[in-house]
Length: 456
Image (cartoon, rainbow, N blue to C red):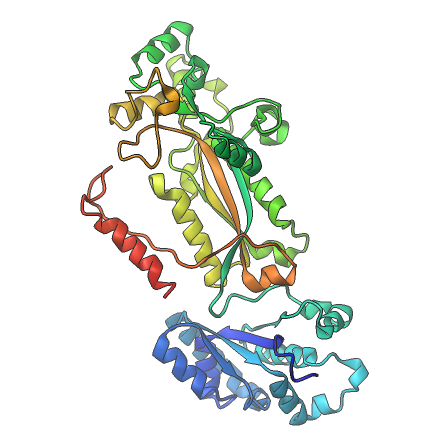
């Protein structure tokens, strides 16, 4: 191999506890890696140049004891370490091992048998270990050889260890400005506003008589909201497709918004995995603040009318917002931060993440009106209300925004386009007031400081 090409490495990953246990058995020595891991308590990178296949020195009689030590140390240490094998390392291990020296060159791809052998030996003594290949130059001849001869060892992306970079690969939106990223962006650029006057049908009181609906509408002190436009035209949310079709009938509106946005984001990122392993390495972190309050209102009315048999069998799953991580108005941001950490800690290669909400209904609006959280000054001028960056901001809206996050090497291996990188994530639970943050901004400062610490 040309020594100038150093973008490729053969990699073997295991946990810090496993390395410690194997080191104690004299199976291999990575003292510098262990020392670095202890000092920094972070992801560590080290060379395997002195490995020389010491793994084979473990006898079958010592395996049970070793497994116990490994389990103990894995429970004590969550730190993980990644080892990179350079071409010199691979050559060194080949030269010192009779099994590899006896292999005919045409029967193996450089390095792949070493990885396979390493993993199998680890598994024999109860060590869970994964091997993978990191791609540098997509045109590299080694990549083509691996794809041709040993595709089973070409795992797309890395396996959750090391200082991972998290990138945004796909975008999806359902907003009061329209359905889709392009529609929303163009409306913003044109200076359009998605806020309008409330209509009676927006209250979603279908199970109530006309008089009750009108009385409720009249008693609302706020009559403006940012409502997602519905219809069958391009850029509108199609209720017949997303809410009334047979496969979506059990879903409520806020879930349908999220599905619509997620489909766009996945299509934008070109991520539709077919292999089981890739599906298992793809996660979801999407939350909402309230859930389907209108379902609760309609169902309560059935009890009042003594028509409980009319209650939908899907009532419980339709209202289960608590199946997601819910932190009120911060839910979407927390969901993205949690997704970022899922990639960072190696639990996923790809995450579909964001927030969704559909709280334009009689009970939600009435509740926010009673808490004085909604605007009352712009009922006759709805397009001037609810400015998000105004110090006097107030109002209510609905919609969904979804991102596809992906680990950098995983994205590069499949040639995906990249929008941005997420460098840091910070949060703060101030417990100061039910709705107001501290006036000195200390909660926001703490959250931003924690995010910046991950960057610098």
